[in-house]
Length: 438
View: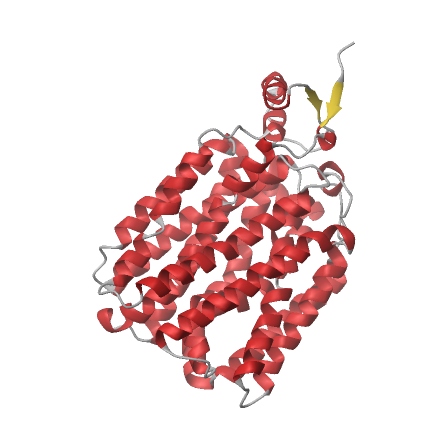
């Protein structure tokens, strides 16, 4: 009699590691291109004669592109599959990065940032769905944590590249074009990755899925069934799913608004706080990036030991306190600034992982990529407005008021988490996708 193994019982294998590593290339590139523009603006501002309005537009352009890319291509990935789309988008990111090296006006830069936002936004729902659908219940917190960590690794890499190229003549061109190098590496790594088995099953390609599982793991594998009809984008706005969508979009927004502000305009913020100037401010951003990245490491463990809900609530509490202290203390010393920023960055690890983990858990395979894309798009509405307005707000009201607004955003995320955050620890994707938050 032929023996079958449940997918959830398969041990973490080399193919899992490959999918986790190369699937996380999109978040790596997002962190990289978001941060590298903040550093290159130090050189671009006098070259292109940028004022606060142009700087805000450049910062927001990528987010507008992300808004479109995540909403559109998440749905396309649910229709045509994960693998094909996440090869095409990485190639596009590399081409646009090289093209950005040759811009000669503020408008051209805004356009390039908009286009790169679209293709990076396309990768998010595709790659994260692929990773989630290849992860067992025990592995899921770790693999989603790895995605979040890769974003911060990309951001830290951009800080280091920007620091090394800071004094080079026309260094901004090489900064903006440098994203093409990791694109090539990621594209090569993704070529041999398989299609998502859960997506194959949802499309009725059961035999193909069985053959794939036997090829990858050397045995027959079975999946629990999901009670969900075929892909319809409007499903994510039905009563059953809309509360989950709204919850994920809000916590995502409240986590990324202060974080994107810190990363996009990190050198300028650090300079205004009196920590350092110019190239030294970029080095200060490297240190902050490292704390963001380190915060993901214990969060990967806490998600399974403490649980999703307590970690989210506790993290938003600490993040709100850290930003509030930076706002209320009128003349903070250097040590105080470092500790406050480090505290915020460290505790953002939990929400940083959960903004990927929750949407992949709370929605079924038929609409998973669509829901991730929609949640990310909704979160980018507030982020777009804030990134555009941040330079103008800092110019008019100062850094203390800016930090207090960031604290208020984190506090709102805390309140929503207390009301709606579910506990999904120890549950399979089939179980979590049936949960209701009302």
